[in-house]
Image (cartoon, rainbow, N blue to C red; front, side, top):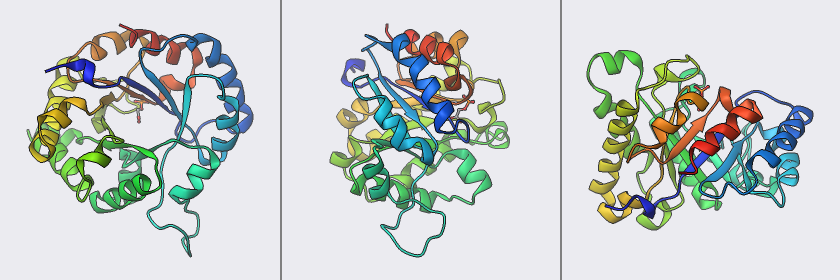
Length: 256
Ligand code: PGA
């Protein structure tokens, strides 16, 4: 087992925050703070409207740009949706797929997550696939089953070659935006369960190489402990990614 086989990825999820003017300010603040921090990949997943201007603004820096969702059809009568090709042309390299807020508030299912993931890969994007259990599911002791099932369905039809472009984010729903972080042991355990699912489907070499992030109230004060765990290869960060100093401090924690 060799952890060096995989990339650490620190990704910000801005959610529905920051119009282009605010996005510009945050990127300007962030750039000097992260210069030379090359031990991890740095991504900001921004509102659709910010993708072109942020893509322009990060040129020459190590910051990569992602979107927060993608539709699975290439084009057509899907009012309000955005296709993977559109995101690529706008300058996105990454895209979050299956975030729990999409599942919870917008009727996203494991099946549509699979379609979106496939469409993102077809267009050359790097999807960040989110999985995670609800509090009731953790309390009932079915976290492993829930997360394994979400992972398996999302990856249906994806071969090992394409999996290399997929990042998985374990985000326990009860930890998102609540200030209640999973313990580093809980994060490590479930990221390990997900790695086991990947090993079962693709073999252990592929599983050892896949980046699995933790997300849910990650902040400067807990990032180092979470990121030190064997199975935790980065973070998907909501609230703390909106403050340049906090996001940069998490990136610092990923330099070891
Ligand atoms: P949070 O959000 O860091 O604000 O808990 C994480 C996420 O939803 O990706």
